[in-house]
Image (cartoon, rainbow, N blue to C red; front, side):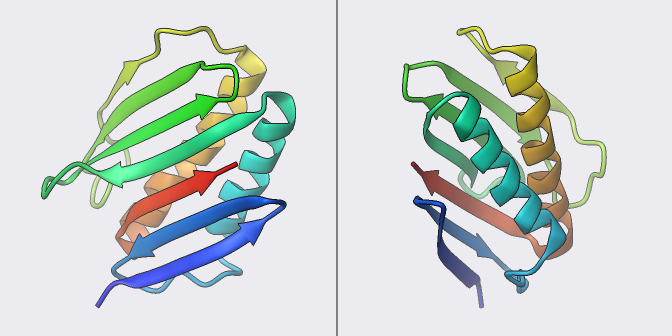
Length: 125
């Protein structure tokens, strides 16, 4: 039975789904919330999504800023691979300081996929 988390964090609506329970006090979940808040302060975001692609074991990680910049990548099998292959489709420029923050978000997404089988995360700003 999937578990669902719905929270409002600093005005951001967060919805997540996993096969195993993710506690609201989970360090990786809190790392995602903190880093999304920090990133949103640097560059106002529109949405961040981390979603399973169909019935595959691959995940799509997307970010869209309020000014239309996008970041899309596929993460291959983060459920069992601690060092998964990734592809990137980044056609708009992002600052190094923004990439550094989103790397921490991605790392926490991968860890929650591996530990809790999280296969859906949506943040709307």
